[in-house]
Amino acid sequence: FSLGPWPGSRPAPARMIYYNARDVLGLSIIFRVHGSVFPKPAVLAMLIALVTVVLKTTPLGRSQTSKLVPQVSVYSFFTFVTSFLVVFRASHSYSRFCEGASALTLMKTKYLDACGQIIGFASASKTADRVAISMFQQKAVRLFSVLHGMSIAQLFALPNMSIPVIA
Image (cartoon, rainbow, N blue to C red; front, side):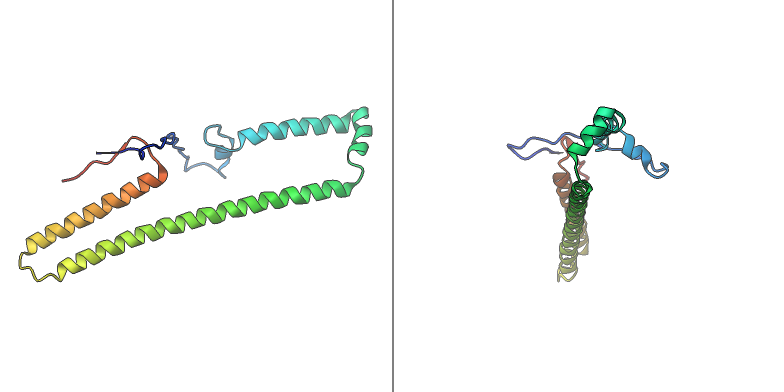
């Protein structure tokens, strides 16, 4: 069977990013175009750097710069606010990532606990047919495995993903 999107929802585009494990310092991840956040801000930063060079090197620019920013405190305040916002956003993003990772681990733990309880209750059964109990326990483990796989697939919204059913 196939794990399609929920009715009425649009599937997310499949974009898998492959990383090179032998990369030194991870610099190739920064400079790659597909899947990186670096190229778009780099264009804006280059434009700002070009304007700064023009303002600092031309005589007209030097006279206009003192009128643009009359005091150094204005630049210091702008730098402080910008760095505070960048650090705040990074901290908030990291806390959201940690919260999601802990929720994912909690889900996996709850599935494992429920499956373990079903197997334990089946083992304590008074039924004499041990083969049927063993088959039931194996089927429960497989069903919980499929449940966990489907939950992960739904979280990551992988379209056209098919999970083979092992009988």
